[in-house]
Length: 150
Image (cartoon, rainbow, N blue to C red):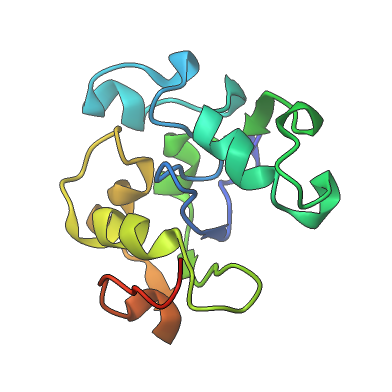
Protein backbone atom coordinates (compact mmCIF):
# COMPACT_ATOMS: atom_id res chain seq x y z
CA UNK A 1 0.00 0.00 0.00
CA UNK A 2 2.90 2.37 0.71
CA UNK A 3 4.34 1.86 -2.79
CA UNK A 4 0.87 2.18 -4.34
CA UNK A 5 0.67 5.70 -2.92
CA UNK A 6 4.07 6.83 -4.18
CA UNK A 7 6.20 5.64 -1.26
CA UNK A 8 6.67 7.15 2.17
CA UNK A 9 7.56 10.83 2.37
CA UNK A 10 9.67 10.22 5.48
CA UNK A 11 10.74 7.33 7.67
CA UNK A 12 11.48 8.16 11.32
CA UNK A 13 13.55 5.56 13.12
CA UNK A 14 15.75 4.82 16.09
CA UNK A 15 17.54 1.55 16.74
CA UNK A 16 16.32 -1.04 19.16
CA UNK A 17 18.75 -2.96 21.33
CA UNK A 18 19.10 -5.54 18.55
CA UNK A 19 19.79 -2.86 15.95
CA UNK A 20 16.31 -3.38 14.57
CA UNK A 21 14.85 -0.88 12.13
CA UNK A 22 11.16 -0.35 12.88
CA UNK A 23 10.59 -3.93 14.01
CA UNK A 24 12.73 -5.46 11.28
CA UNK A 25 14.60 -7.79 13.62
CA UNK A 26 17.95 -9.43 12.80
CA UNK A 27 16.71 -12.85 13.91
CA UNK A 28 13.10 -12.71 12.64
CA UNK A 29 12.33 -15.68 10.39
CA UNK A 30 10.13 -13.37 8.32
CA UNK A 31 13.17 -11.30 7.24
CA UNK A 32 15.72 -13.95 6.28
CA UNK A 33 17.73 -13.81 3.08
CA UNK A 34 20.86 -12.39 1.51
CA UNK A 35 21.45 -8.64 1.82
CA UNK A 36 20.07 -8.08 -1.68
CA UNK A 37 16.96 -10.23 -1.01
CA UNK A 38 16.47 -8.55 2.36
CA UNK A 39 16.56 -5.07 0.80
CA UNK A 40 13.57 -6.00 -1.39
CA UNK A 41 11.34 -7.24 1.45
CA UNK A 42 8.19 -5.27 2.19
CA UNK A 43 5.90 -4.77 5.16
CA UNK A 44 4.79 -7.80 7.16
CA UNK A 45 3.99 -9.16 10.60
CA UNK A 46 7.19 -10.42 12.18
CA UNK A 47 8.46 -12.17 15.28
CA UNK A 48 10.11 -9.92 17.85
CA UNK A 49 13.48 -10.72 19.36
CA UNK A 50 13.59 -11.67 23.05
CA UNK A 51 15.80 -8.58 23.49
CA UNK A 52 13.07 -6.37 22.01
CA UNK A 53 10.47 -7.96 24.27
CA UNK A 54 12.67 -7.19 27.29
CA UNK A 55 13.41 -3.65 26.07
CA UNK A 56 9.71 -2.91 25.48
CA UNK A 57 8.70 -4.40 28.83
CA UNK A 58 10.41 -1.40 30.43
CA UNK A 59 8.15 1.11 28.64
CA UNK A 60 5.30 2.72 30.56
CA UNK A 61 2.60 1.17 28.39
CA UNK A 62 3.77 -2.26 29.58
CA UNK A 63 4.20 -1.30 33.24
CA UNK A 64 7.95 -0.47 33.37
CA UNK A 65 8.50 -3.70 35.28
CA UNK A 66 10.08 -6.28 33.01
CA UNK A 67 6.77 -8.11 32.53
CA UNK A 68 7.63 -9.90 29.29
CA UNK A 69 4.17 -11.49 29.14
CA UNK A 70 2.62 -8.02 28.69
CA UNK A 71 4.49 -7.39 25.41
CA UNK A 72 3.04 -8.79 22.17
CA UNK A 73 5.50 -11.29 20.64
CA UNK A 74 4.89 -10.06 17.08
CA UNK A 75 4.61 -6.68 15.38
CA UNK A 76 3.32 -5.28 12.11
CA UNK A 77 6.19 -3.39 10.53
CA UNK A 78 7.37 -1.76 7.35
CA UNK A 79 10.02 -3.56 5.33
CA UNK A 80 13.54 -2.63 4.28
CA UNK A 81 12.26 -1.71 0.80
CA UNK A 82 9.91 0.85 2.36
CA UNK A 83 12.78 2.47 4.27
CA UNK A 84 15.07 2.43 1.23
CA UNK A 85 12.38 3.94 -1.01
CA UNK A 86 11.31 6.66 1.45
CA UNK A 87 11.94 10.15 0.14
CA UNK A 88 13.67 11.12 3.39
CA UNK A 89 14.92 9.40 6.56
CA UNK A 90 15.49 10.76 10.07
CA UNK A 91 17.15 8.53 12.67
CA UNK A 92 17.28 9.34 16.40
CA UNK A 93 19.70 7.92 18.97
CA UNK A 94 18.84 9.26 22.40
CA UNK A 95 17.21 6.61 24.59
CA UNK A 96 18.40 6.53 28.20
CA UNK A 97 17.04 4.96 31.37
CA UNK A 98 14.82 7.64 32.92
CA UNK A 99 17.13 10.52 32.01
CA UNK A 100 20.27 9.00 33.51
CA UNK A 101 23.55 8.34 31.71
CA UNK A 102 22.61 4.65 31.51
CA UNK A 103 21.82 3.78 27.90
CA UNK A 104 21.81 0.43 26.15
CA UNK A 105 21.62 2.44 22.91
CA UNK A 106 25.20 3.74 23.31
CA UNK A 107 26.69 0.47 22.02
CA UNK A 108 23.97 -0.24 19.43
CA UNK A 109 24.46 3.23 17.94
CA UNK A 110 28.09 2.43 17.23
CA UNK A 111 27.14 -0.80 15.45
CA UNK A 112 24.42 0.97 13.44
CA UNK A 113 26.49 3.96 12.37
CA UNK A 114 30.00 2.49 12.10
CA UNK A 115 29.73 -1.30 11.85
CA UNK A 116 29.33 -3.42 8.75
CA UNK A 117 26.14 -3.02 6.70
CA UNK A 118 24.28 -6.25 7.34
CA UNK A 119 20.77 -7.61 7.96
CA UNK A 120 22.22 -8.74 11.32
CA UNK A 121 22.09 -5.04 12.32
CA UNK A 122 19.11 -3.89 10.24
CA UNK A 123 19.54 -0.15 10.95
CA UNK A 124 23.04 -0.34 9.46
CA UNK A 125 21.40 -0.08 6.01
CA UNK A 126 21.02 3.64 6.78
CA UNK A 127 24.78 4.01 6.23
CA UNK A 128 24.09 3.53 2.52
CA UNK A 129 21.17 6.00 2.34
CA UNK A 130 20.85 9.77 2.70
CA UNK A 131 19.71 9.94 6.33
CA UNK A 132 19.70 12.75 8.88
CA UNK A 133 20.90 11.30 12.18
CA UNK A 134 20.57 12.80 15.66
CA UNK A 135 22.84 11.37 18.36
CA UNK A 136 22.37 12.82 21.85
CA UNK A 137 25.35 13.80 23.97
CA UNK A 138 24.56 10.95 26.35
CA UNK A 139 24.64 8.35 23.57
CA UNK A 140 27.83 9.89 22.14
CA UNK A 141 29.67 9.49 25.48
CA UNK A 142 32.55 7.07 25.63
CA UNK A 143 31.79 3.54 26.69
CA UNK A 144 33.79 3.01 29.84
CA UNK A 145 33.64 1.25 33.17
CA UNK A 146 31.92 3.19 35.97
CA UNK A 147 32.56 1.49 39.30
CA UNK A 148 30.44 4.12 41.09
CA UNK A 149 27.29 2.76 39.48
CA UNK A 150 26.51 -0.84 40.13
